[in-house]
Image 1 (cartoon, rainbow, N blue to C red):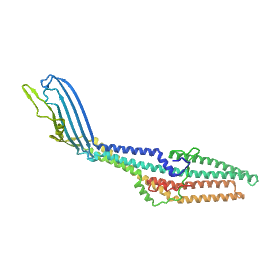
Image 2 (image 1 turned 180 degrees about the vertical axis):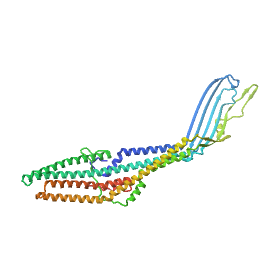
Image 3 (image 1 turned 45 degrees about the horizontal axis):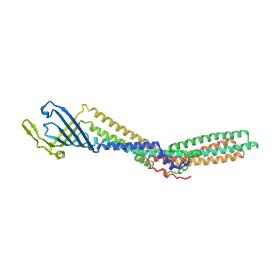
Image 4 (image 1 turned 90 degrees about the vertical axis):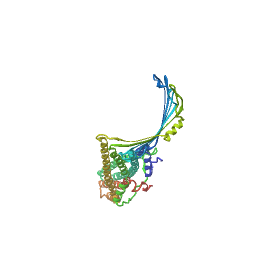
Length: 488
């Protein structure tokens, strides 16, 4: 953005949106909420596990049946598994374990020996509300993400409304300053004229004093207006995030407030605000998130009852060898490689199965019931905050609508007041030049003219500021800043 000292409203809004700390913070909150949703969704991603362990040991033995005076074994254990938690609370695990054992024992029929075990295990909670409990983290995070997004969008709208209102305040400040400078210049000219008339004997020294006092007052008021204008310009600088080029003391407005802003039925804009306001939508999403946790807590307060079942298979393989026991030589019929043992476990050549129920009953149930009460209360709190916010929103929307309804009449009245004050100044000045009025009277009507001009400035921007506020409250339904005419 070019840092010109003359600034269109659209450019000011764009600059503020790009640099605003509040907007960036709201965007970061939204990013954090998205990350939380991604994290909670990750609980339902399948998990692969791998493990391997190797043990080599030598054990002294005093038993004949150990098969060696010093028993030397080397055992490698490996396991691979796939675990998945479903959105209805089902936990499924598939695993395959294998053990390779090598020993110097004289009574080992297989060395190395391969032992494999495969299993498919299922655990299903029956009293946990299924998806209500299992998905509560993800569902809650999704609603909180929606809430953060709505608040981010509302922050952009709020910033836009703030920029517009500051911009129009600066416009009014520039106009008031220009009026005050003109009044000061007229006061200086009036003092000069009064001094000339005093020299000619047309007026007395009292009127010269009145003119001098009026000029001094206008000089002070001009300084006040200049300070106020500098403050408004500095406020705009802080809102949009940068300063004008070197050599420019302050930003100057380019756009003008519209002369008329049509206002339709206020009830329509109340309905639009209640339906579209981003803050309300964010609060609704938060209510839904808390309801998710409350519904899950209702089930989680109950005793837990889990159904457990598993299917498995076993396998055995290895290199057979003869075992001498007394006068007998023994030999096993088991043989096969490691892959054969794995195949046996997977094909369930030697099957196994299991089924059971697991019940857990916390005595008193105070933990679960207390958590349920707490979460139910949080839902009520969120609902009442939403109800209060709707009342405040409706009140603000109707107030802005009243300002717009009366805006045209207010502007017409202010313009008529300026015209009347200007005409009064003209008449009193003629009377003063003809000796039928005093300097005091001319000073008074001059001050009245300045006040009328300032009131006109405020009336001129009041409707524009009300429209900006209404756009913010209705989340853009009332229009957008690009409807403002530009150019000056």
